[in-house]
View: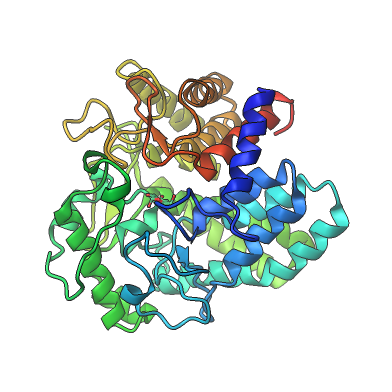
Amino acid sequence: MTDLIATACSILRQNDRGGYTVPTARLYPFQWNWDSAFVAMGFATFDAPRAWSEIRLLLRGQWDDGLIPHIVFHAPSDDYFPGPDVWHTRHRVPTSGIPQPPVLASAARFLVDHAPDPALADAEMAAIYPALLRNHLWWHSARDPHGTGLVATLHPWETGMDNSPAWDSAMARVPTDTSTVIRRRDTTHIAPEMRPRAEDYQRFIHLVDHYSAAGWDPARMFASAPFKVADIGTNAILLRAERDLLALAERFGTAAERHAMTTRIARQTAAIAAQWSEDHGIFLPRDLLTDTPIDAATSAGFLPLWAGCVTQAQSARLGATLDLWASQVQRLVPSFNPADPRFEPQRYWRGPVWHVVNWMIAEGFQTAGDMAHASRIRADTLANVTGSGFDEYFDPRNGAGLGGRDFSWTAAILLLQSLQVAGGS
Ligand code: GLC
C-alpha cells in the first residue's frame, strides 16, 4: 500500500500544470470539472494548500451566470478536439459551454472536514462558498426552470458518462450534420475500438453547434434542445452536493440560504424517488422529450445511494442487483448491466469500470449500513490498480487497464481509499 500511495501522489504531481491538474498527459490536456473535484480530495490527503488551488483554478472558469463549465482551457494545446475554437464561448479564460456532474461542493466539504489547518480551510471555504451557491442556483434555474426537482442534461458529455447506452435512443434523434470540421485527436492516442464511434461524434458536435448558435443562453438552450434527459447520476450527485452545501452553509451561509436549500432538497429527493424501477431493481434515467423512463440499467443507477436518499428496501434491492452483475463479471462495478445485449466491456461507458463511480457507490452502501457491498467494491478497485496500474478505466471481465495511463482521478481514488484502510472516512 505504501508504494501505491507514493505512486498515486507522484501521478498527481506529474499531471500538475501549475495549480491545476490535467486528467492525463496528452489525451486530456486541460482542466476537467468533475475530475478536479476528485483530484482536490486526493490532494487533500497529503497537500491541503494544493487541494484548494485545484478548486480555485476550476472556479476561474465559472461564468457570470453561475455555470462551472466541464473544461477550462487554461493553456492552448493541439492534442484535443473540440478546443475553444469550436465552442465559441465568451469567457475570460476560454471554456466549454456545458457543465459536468457537480461533485464540487461535496469535495469542498471533504477538504474542510479533513483539514490539517482549520484556519486555512475556513478562509478558503469562505472565499469560494458564494461561487458554489451561485453554481447550484444555476443548476436549478438553467436546468429545472419549471421546478420539477430533476435537472436536465442537454449533452451526453455533461453526464461524464459520455457514450453510455442510456443515451442511445435519445441521441438517435439528434441529426448527424455539423457545420464544424471534425478533427478527432482521441483516436490517435487510444485504440479506436475503445472510443466513441464516428457517427456518435458527429451528433456530439451537432449539439455543440446548436447551443453555440443559441448563444449559450440557458433559456434558449433549454427550450430548443434536441437532446434532453434527466440523468440519474447527475441528479443524485447534485442532491448530495446540495446536502453538503447545506452543511457548509451552517458556518458559511445565511438562514435564508439554508431554508431555500432545504426546500430544494425535499423536492429533489421526491423526484429521484420517482425514478426507481422495481422491474430493474435500480434507479433509471428519464427522457424528458418523450417523458418516459429510459430502459438502461447503468452504474449511475446506484448513485442515489451516494445521495443518501434510498429506503432500506431499495438499498437491499440495489445490493441484490449488484450481486447479479457480480455473477457475470469479475470486477465491480461495470458501467452497464452485463446481461444487457448492449454491454461492451471495453468501450467507453458501455461496460468498463471507473473508479470514481466505484468510490461514490461504495461510500453510498456504507452510509446505508451495507458494509459487505462497500468492501467488495473497494477490494475490486484496489485489485485493479494493483494488477494493472492507474489506468483511466478497467475491463470488468478481468481488471485489465484501458484508456489513458497514469490517470489523475484513478490516483485520487486510491488515496481516498487509503484513508479508509487507515480507519478514517
Ligand atoms: C472523458 C470522460 C469524462 C471525463 C473526461 C476527462 O470524457 O467520459 O467523464 O471527465 O474524460 O477524464
